[in-house]
Image (cartoon, rainbow, N blue to C red; front, side):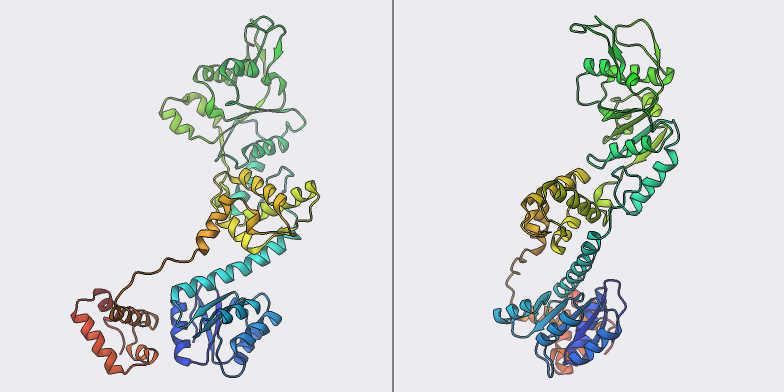
Length: 469
C-alpha cells in the first residue's frame, strides 16, 4: 500500500500487517509516500531498488529485528535515516537505538503527529547534511566579484537588474532592511557601469549633524564658518566622474533636502559660504531602510526629492526570504574567518545548519556574518555545532526540541474515546479496519460509536458520518 506525498518516500517495516496499514494511512494523510513491508529482508530489497528518504521499523520482528536492520541500513545506505518503534520504551532500548545510528525512537503505538514530525526532521537533517558537505567543495557564487553571494531566485533577479541598469546614469534608490547589503549593490552598480574607473564615494547621512553634513557634501570656502581656516572640496566634487553613494538618505535633515534637490536638478553646486557655482558630474545612488513613501505622506521627506532619487528602484531581499543562501553565505564566511584566524574550521554540522535556516535574521547578512565570526572563534572541532552559535540563534533550536508539556489528566473513558477517534482518522473512517486495529469485536465498536454519538460527541460524529462499514 502506498500513498503519494510531497514530504518524502518512507519504507515502513513491521510484521504486524494491520499496524502497517494503520501507520501507512496516517503518514499518507500527513504528506508522505509510504511503502510497507512485513520483514527487514523485504525492506532492504526496496532500499536497493528505489530512492528512499527514511525507514520506520519495528524493533521486535521475526528474522532480522529492527536493531539489526538499523545497523545494516547505516552500512549500506548511510544517507537514509532510520526511526525505530518498540512496544517496550526502555532506556536501554533507546540507548541501543542511538548507538546503532537511529535518528529517533518511538514507543508503540506512536502518536501519529509526533511520528510524522520526527520523520520530517530526520529527512530534513539528512538533506542538510548533504547540502553542507556539498557546499564545502563549491566556491561561493559571487559572479561580479562584489561580495553579492547567493543563488536564490530573489538574488538572481536582483543581480540581473543590477546588470541591466549599471550602464545608465539614472539615479538609483536601493531599499531594504538593515544589513541586507545595500552598499554592496551600490558598489556593483558602480563597478559594472561606465564610471567604473572613477571614484566611488560614500557617506552616511545619519552619521553627522546637519551643518557638518552640508559642508561634507558641498564643500566650503575659507572663512565660511568658525574654524573654516582652509577651503574644503565636498564629496560631490571628490566623486567627479564617478558615483556618490548617499547611505541612510531617509535621515537627511529637512532643511538640507531642498539644497540637495537643487544640486541634483541643476547639476551645479555652490560651496558653503561661496559665491561661485561649480558644475558636478556624478551618478547618485541612495539607500535607505525606511519607507520613504510613508515619510513623504508624513511630510518628513520631500516628494520632489523622492522622485528625483527614485528614478530606478532596487529592493534588496531580506536574508530570511533567500532560502539556502543562508547556508551558502555561512560557508563563505566560515572559509574567510577560518583563514583569517588560522583555525581548521571547514563547515557546519547538520544541526547547526538547521538552526541557521530556522532563525529569522532580523540583522540579515551582517548579523549572519557576525554570528559566524563568533562561532569560528568558539569552535573546538572542524565543524561548527549548535553550541558555537550565539544564544539568540540557538533559542529556536531549544524551543523546537523542548519536551512537550504533560497533557491534562482526563478520565480513562475519555482516553478510550480519543484513541478510537485517532484510529478512525488514520483509517479514513473504515470501522471494520478500525476494529481490527483496536483488537475489539466489530459490534463492540459499533455500540460504542452509537453511545458516544447519542451523548453529543460532535467531533466523533463528524469523523464517522458516512464512513464505510
